[in-house]
Amino acid sequence: MVAARRTSGPGTDALAAAIASRREELVALTQDLIRIPTVNPPGADYLQACEYLQDRMTRSGFEVELIRATGAPGDSDAFPRWNVIGRREGKRPGPCVHFNSHIDVVETGSGWSVDPFSGSERDGRIYGRGSCDMKGGLAASIIAVEVFLEIHPDYPGAIEISGTADEESGGYGGVAHLAEKGLLGAPRVDHMIIPEPLNKDRICLGHRGVWWAEIETFGRIAHGSMPFLGDCAVRHMAAVLRAFEDELYPALARRTTPMPIVPEGARQSTMNINSIHGGLMEGHDGFPAACVPDSCRMVIDRRFLIEEELQAVKDEVSDVLDDLTRSRQGFSYGISDIFEVNPTLTDKGAPVVRSVASAIRQVLGREPEFVISPGTYDQKHIDRIGRLKDCIAYGPGILDLAHQPDEYVGIDDMIASATVMAIALHDLLYGGKAI
Image 1: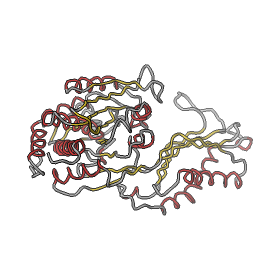
Image 2: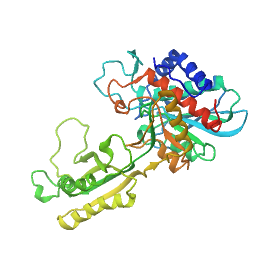
Image 3: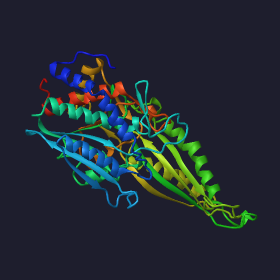
Image 4: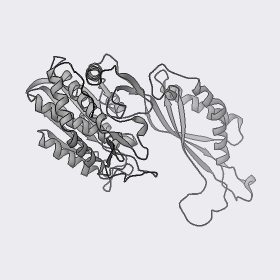
């Protein structure tokens, strides 16, 4: 177990001891959550996970609501986008502290040595898809809140816990939907912690920006034995790729930031080619037909820095395409936005940052590391739609294990993070008064 460390007083010691005594319960809760295979896409078993959390929070005195994001991307009768949010009012007025975790996980992939949904415990670790990202963090936040309520039943303000859908596919059926309804953001919520797996001694202040877009090049269909009678859209897309390699990628590599993004390689602008599709439809048996493709589509995933403007990011891609229109015979293209999010950065002096940083010093005995995520997470919707700036990501788990085979979360790390969250919760509700 985590070695005991002297905290700031008997109150913090009581929280730490009570959380440590719940080790087996924390393990069981994490395993229960992993065993609900909420794989997204397609978005399976959301209701089962939400009902499990509803039952748990109701037993702790929360008023709980299940909310379906009807009409959100991916929502259907087969795979409805369910979310759960619980609120417990204190004995007197005060701020609202909210813990938000996504309940969806990515597909398992291959290469596992254990059943991805078994929640196997081995050598102080819990294995399974979503153990690290982020059902371990969800479980830790629940234990933190339950212990806090036992020790401080007369607290001021309000405490909320939510389990939300679709973070792995953009969060539009989860946090975005609830923020649009006024449930996740100001003025209802004052402080928010998202227990994403950034390591127990790190505070994540925000993330880079993202622009996803689809580029399509056009050609003319013809018989494949006489390609000179057609115009190959795939060759036009190859010219786009070549121009990106020669012009755009070198420019992105030169563009860096002092933002503490982890890993260090993400401290520059990046672009990933997400997919390319051209020619005949796939997924059928037999041989292909002899045709010159008249369309080729490419999806790009552009991640940009806080120093960059979104419109300039778009313009530099369009400039490459426009140059090809002028210089390459027969070249024409279309481009459409898929989604876009500006960079997010919470100030180091914000109340939630100060409270969690202080708790890390007390529990772990060292200074926290302040980081920025290379990819977006649901803070983007809290900032953009909820207009809440006092929001961070903090939780157990090693970021590099997310989406990997044999994903795991350390039990000691969950206990330490739960203790940090409980102490920070007290600090935020009581305005920094000693426990």
